[in-house]
Length: 600
Ligand code: PEP
Ligand code: MG
Image (cartoon, rainbow, N blue to C red; front, side, top):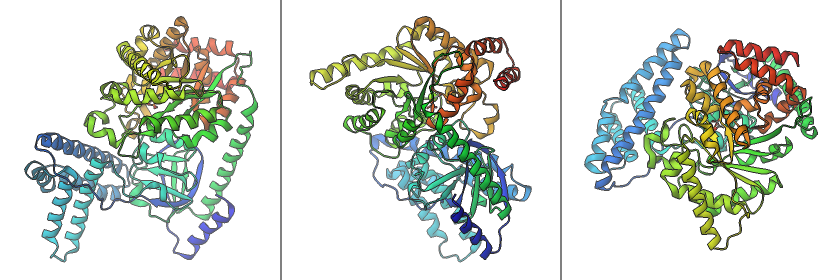
């Protein structure tokens, strides 16, 4: 924040009764310091579609309603856990409120009535819940009682929560917030984060969310300081309050005193100076002290990152998460639309390689247009997601392949398959790729002479354990350490309650990485790492020591990793990596790594 606007923040506070400074700790998921005005995303009435459900689809509609109820229950249960960490009085108050929400999501009149409307009147689930809430409200309308009015508000809040889960809608688009806002919300989904405009939003914080989820990744990609998993935040922050988000430490400060504000302004200044120093690295080669060249690629979530990718001097894009094409819309992008998006990116890259990952919708990354198809399964980290969904809906894959093949005429491009767990999935995908290429050829559509290399994300333990078999059916590997850690340690990467257990340096994860690298080197296929550890300079020496020569990361982290690469002596790093791989204790691994890092 510039000095002028800081002065304004100070003035605002001096005319009103100064509010008490509140400090709350959470998970720092994207570094930097943001100082700005709170913009609370509130819930409210939601416009819903209304239609008659075909008699043959009633069971499906009821199932859709139950899935939404499940989502709302999970949200409330996570909020109750968070509330327990608040100071006693606030915890009690929030606890009672959330207990009431949980009951309303159980066998309540609201839920029973909505179910009845779906099965008897054939009303769609969203309209059924809204009709039921209208009935309940009308029944109490004549009573002028503030207690009842408050309870009705609670019932409306619960109904809206179910409706939002049904429609995946959000009340107010995040894209339209005032300039200089810090968005505060109960939850910021990856799709919400994709709508944040860094020209208006300077940071964000939420009650829910883990450090390794896609919301966190998106925050880092956009260079927005962010803190997730902040208990009690949405109950305490009011729109217009001054707020500081310290994404490094993982702390938010509401209504800071002038003294606190001054401390954080100087921290912010220091942080920016450090970043500016890093930007000078662009022209330096990424070469180790003993002369080995390392390729540093960028991970891209959104096309608006492209200027940053070029500024960071990335060798190309090692992971284009194509989900952005499918988010925040209720239809599917067609071949032409996908081609045009790829064309713009590939033109900007100007000869550098673009690695497009096929759709990895599922888990926390949902697309309205596909949710109905896959229902609850899409929300499960173990469900019909990634390549499984693409093979279950080959039309999706065919359209994506066609767009990629057309783009292949414009520059080097590779295709990456997410969530692969068997060789069959790769073979099936290649068959589809060949079929689509043949069809484009018949239509005389221009493509590259050779089919693009087809690679596999190694992010499921079964893929790492059978990497030697996968080598024979694919052209390259990209290790997704985020999911590999999640699935190996059985830790939901988006759940703030288990965030401290998430450890990509756990020996089990490292052994799977080592196995995959070994298989790729023996099979002579390229291998890169594109999970978040690739962008962590603390881990660079270990990854290089394990034989990795290609890293792909958020463009913002390329300069820091490049600097680290230039400090490392590869033969010493290789020796240290083998000492580390002999360990079976995470603490010892961390110590051996930190000791090595301290030396160079
Ligand atoms: C990973 O799992 O490490 C990865 C790069 O994919 P994503 O973070 O998009 O799941
Ligand atoms: Mg993944």
